[in-house]
Length: 107
Image (cartoon, rainbow, N blue to C red; front, side, top):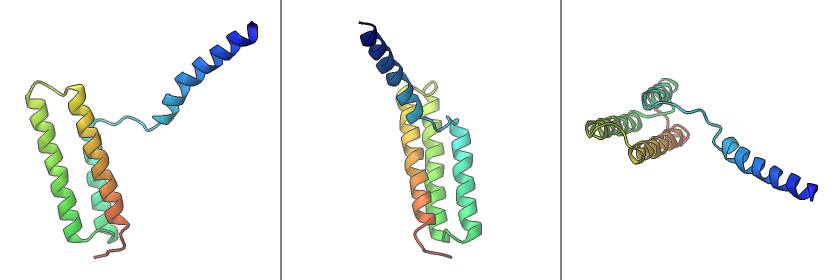
C-alpha cells in the first residue's frame, strides 16, 4: 500500500511541475512586449534583414495592436479574454518579424 501512495504522490507532483516547465518563458507586460518588438524591427533594419516595405508593414501592425489595446483599456481595463487576445496577436506579430527577418530578402 505504501508504494501506491508514493506513486499517487509522484503523479501529483509531475502534474504540477510539467505545466510550469512548459510555460518557462518569462512573463512580460504589454508595454515591454511592444518595446521588444520595436527593438527587433529596428535591429532588422540596421542589419539589412528587413526591407523598407517589410518594416513599414510590421510597424503598421504594431501600431494597430497599440490602438487595439487602447480600445480595450477604454472599456474599464483589460479583461482576461482581452489580455489573452493581445498576447495571441503579439505572438503572431513576433512570428511574422522572425519570418520576415529570415526570408532572405535584403535591402
